[in-house]
Image 1: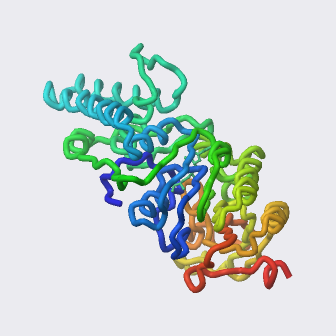
Image 2: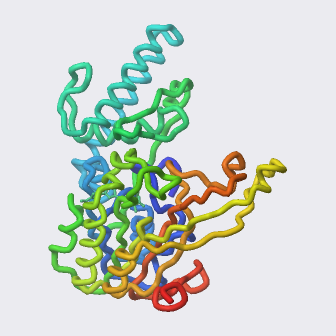
Image 3: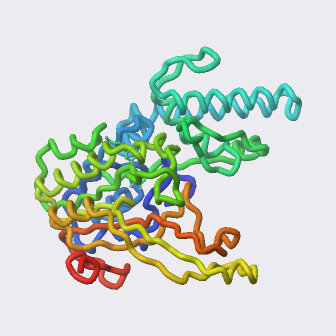
Length: 373
Ligand SMILES: C[S@@+](CC[C@H](N)C(=O)[O-])C[C@H]1O[C@@H](n2cnc3c(N)ncnc32)[C@H](O)[C@@H]1O
């Protein structure tokens, strides 16, 4: 997908198809994606005819608005792109009048704050300046904030509220911005639901693949010492400390198994393999840039692994440590490396049931074999 394609970005979107090989080389009649997000796997799969139809769900109305656009519901697409264009016009109008003045910068910041308010309050109808807004504005806010915030990364604080500022070169950024709409092949049905469970309430016929990629469950105080994740993630669809997030994952896995899906791929950090790592003092002494790992052990979070085994998931792939918005790759953090302190690093896990396993593409650990033993 080109960088200009209009998608609501999601931290953790599965855009790297080598790292996340959902597709196993077969053709499927239906792909069920109960936590659709930006559809980084399933949209190309539909476009490339690996799957013939999609049944997706997402709780976020902004995400659904873009999916509505993708699936060719003209009303949705016209509303959303019209809404985005209106916001862009509000900013570009500022460029034409009094550009560079203090008043002008102030107005740009105020517009940006209105977008932040809408992002943080999707359910309210009136923004901080008394303007009426709706779900399209919410979707537009999610998209535009990525374009306009400093550093291009929409971050939240521990309370789940946005923690971003307007980039200084916003005028150049907005003037040069051109977006493409996602393209959906004709005669490829796309059904969009609001909750994951609805995907499994409709009758599914034909060969089916399910990709389950929910918000991550990662209980614990901090991202680094205990392997937990910040509550900042809650703004992206679920508090990682909340047990209901784990239940949602299990519910979706169970529903996919009950629906008789031919292949199920489920991904999460609560594959519950934590790695405890012990570093040598060497890196600190010589000021080396790469920490020297002297011992590391895998710790299994038993309940989830047990559940997955019961559900018939024999295979777990380790995709490496979480390195997104809350964890830092310790090996490139020499300041922290020269201690004998033990740390736990949450690893991303990849579970497969049915279909063709990805032999040779990612390192595989058999739950029934060497790891479980
Ligand atoms: C990890 S993201 C999915 C990312 C996606 N695989 C991608 O490549 O972009 C999880 C998604 O689950 C959605 N979500 C949270 N709760 C949900 C629910 N109850 N039903 C459906 N979707 C939900 C969030 O809005 C978010 O878009």
